[in-house]
Image (cartoon, rainbow, N blue to C red; front, side, top):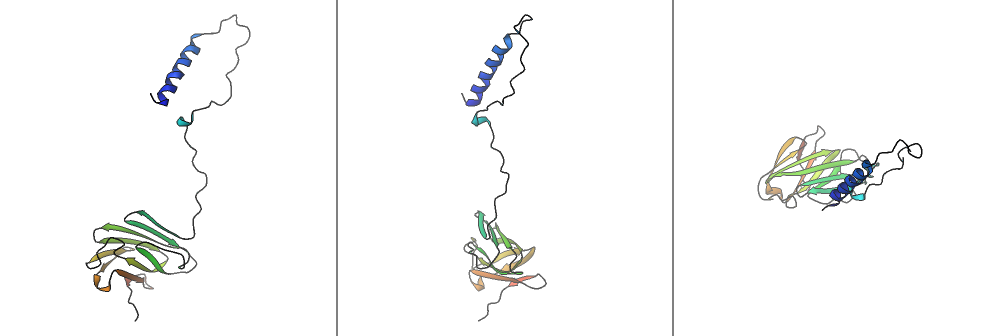
Length: 170
């Protein structure tokens, strides 16, 4: 028998025994009011109170929530970042920047950014082939990644907000 069944059975027995007697009209005095003390519940039947304060955010964060999803948040580019998605440049320094990347298929990546000017994607770390075509959807803009630039792809946002492959300066 589990604890809940035992407590229920005991409670029924107590109620049955307590309910069998009725005070007689010739009792010794007035019937007392029920005790106002709180009833103790076993720990297994009580629920833990919900936390009242939210956890304090860290200044930087790279979280892999599932194997195909990564969340990157930074205030400064010198903060450590790891994983297949890295923020390389911010639109406005001193303001938090974030990027969320999702592996949406065998050759499809989806990235959403906030306050990000440039990103780096490590295709092998993302589980993408670096020698075949990969479709990237970044901030609702589609870009085709070909393997000719190698396993690391870099992208930058123009002043108008359009993303394009970053051309490396030699």
